[in-house]
Length: 320
Length: 280
Image (cartoon, rainbow over all chains, first blue to last red):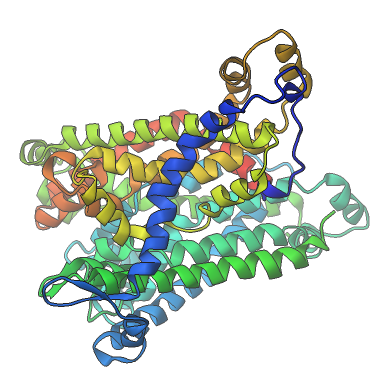
């Protein structure tokens, strides 16, 4: 973190400016700090405060303690949807960890092999989906997987697997996994680039000795390179975690705010949106929405803290 | 890649794997681009072939351009992204300079305060952001989006730029100070030009999520006049679900500018991302 750096004492303070109030420091810092405080920090804190209030029919807000949280956790009217969304979100994250990150690390390992040609072209092309809007990606896959168009079915048919096709997005048991895989397809580029950069940063001298001893590339990867890129994998994990527990766009675009079929694809982001903004017959409930946001905030905070305290501390021991 | 296999064979296998994944990554995008330029009949009868003389049709683009205001949406996205970019880079550089150069009470605390926003998604404050924007009478304005996105982009910008500014040799600044150059001029004339590569990195990190965002346009500026391209496409496709030509054409119109930009700047973008990775 930036704060741990030693502070440099500027020579300017010595050059005859002593005693004058350092207005320039204020001028440099004020605009950024002000915008950040007003439009990011204040709303985040104010959301925490709002989550302790409730709203009556007339729209008057009054303090209610932890009533919103109690409703979310235990009142079936809310808790069914809440636990469903949380469970789905955990599954959504698990798919990313088990599919996205291994694929990304595997591809990065291949790209980082010595003397491989066209690596720039490969990684540029592989990164393309990551650059596009989730909205675009959601619609593209919705079209491809649509039984009306039948592209997915006919493609599976050409490799003799046509019978495997089903309207995956429309079925309760497969919709969430399908969307998680679409998300994996889009975001693989990010961990791919991060691990690739980390692999390139490993000094040749470390792998050279092993090669001289007759170790193959596979052994070198598992025994030398992989242990060295654990810090990057830790970073990828926390970035994936924050991204997944904050996701919304893909589900909203592909399945709508109701996250169908029958809430099978509902995650915390879509649940938050519905609670706060309302949908169809249900009116929006800002204070309950703030409570959902606060829970998401605490989940993400817990993840980030775990990362910094456990992973980072443990990793420091391995640093070169 | 086992040691006993011939090097040439294993290289071929590596290329095969990479090629297969490249096809998987590009195929859906290419499929949409192909079919956007085909007649409705051809979209369904031969979805996998590129548009040919018999199947070529621009009917979808015709629908999109007459039925919706794509030019306006595009302009809105451009305004929001460029204005935010300027603020994030310029205000971020100013703050980063102050944090990395001057020693003052609370420097470390302020740096930490500003860095917290890197990890916490601003989306979680939406309930209060909406109230704030309403009370400022900025609902359905591009200014609302610009302010929120600037707050969102500043933490990472300040973090990256102060890392870079710490590496600037002291002699440069000191000699300027000895010549009596003021602090503002030092920043503007000496420091900013020196960290130009870092400014580009920050610009890339800032630009992509803003251009692609759906959440804040949906909540803060859903009006017809302020729709961004991402929201515009989302609403258009929702409305014309059954018009496959129009849907494919609108997706294509949203994809092409990004692909063109990427074709020009992919090298800088990827260098910036990997550099950021190594630093982080």
